[in-house]
Image (tube, rainbow, N blue to C red; front, side, top):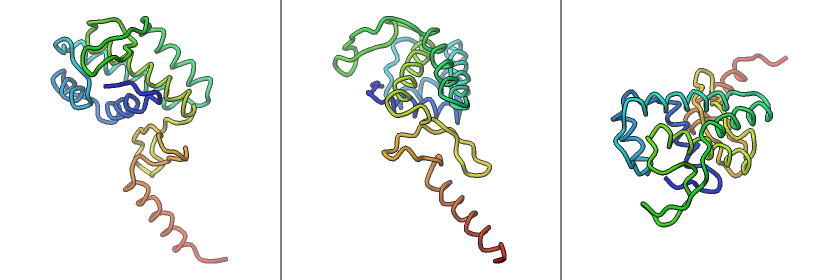
Amino acid sequence: MHLNPYGADVVNFAAELANRPPASADELADRCRTAGLVLERPVEPSDLDQTLAVIDAWTNVVDATGERAKAELVNEMLARSAAYPRLTDHAHGWHLHYRDDLQPLGAVLFALISVGTAMHLVSRGMDRLGRCAAAGCGTIFADTSRTARQRYCSQPCANRDAVRRHRARQSTPPT
C-alpha cells in the first residue's frame, strides 16, 4: 500500500477495518493483501490484537470533538509508532516507510494508520473523518471529496436519508 500525500488509501483502509473488524489473523492477512500491503512476515494472532487496538485508537480520533482533541489523539498514536522514515524498494519501486524494517504486521499497520491519518487531517482538514449522518447507520468514512462536504458513508445512505426527509416534509401539514 503506497502512502499518498493525502493519506487516502490508508484512512480508507482504516475505516474499512473499523467498520468490519477482521475476525482472525488469516482474514487480516487477506484483507491487507487485497489492499495492496506487502506482508514481509507471517501474520500472527498478536498482529490481529495489535490491529484491533490501533483501530480502537483510530476510532477515538474519528469520534473526537474538536481539532485539538483529534490532534492530541493522533499525536499519541504517532508517538507510540514512531520510527525514522526510510527509503525502501521492496515491492513497488522506491518509496517511504514510516516504520522500522521487518516489523510484525500489527506494528506496520499502527505506523501506517497513524501517519496516514496525520497526513490526511493536515492536508485535507481536521474534520475530514466522520460517521454517516443517516439515521441508524454510523459507518465511519474518510472524507476525500473535493468539496469537503461528505456526510454519508455511501450514496445509498444519502438517498435513504433524502427520502426520509422528503417523506417527513410531506407528512407535516402546512401551517
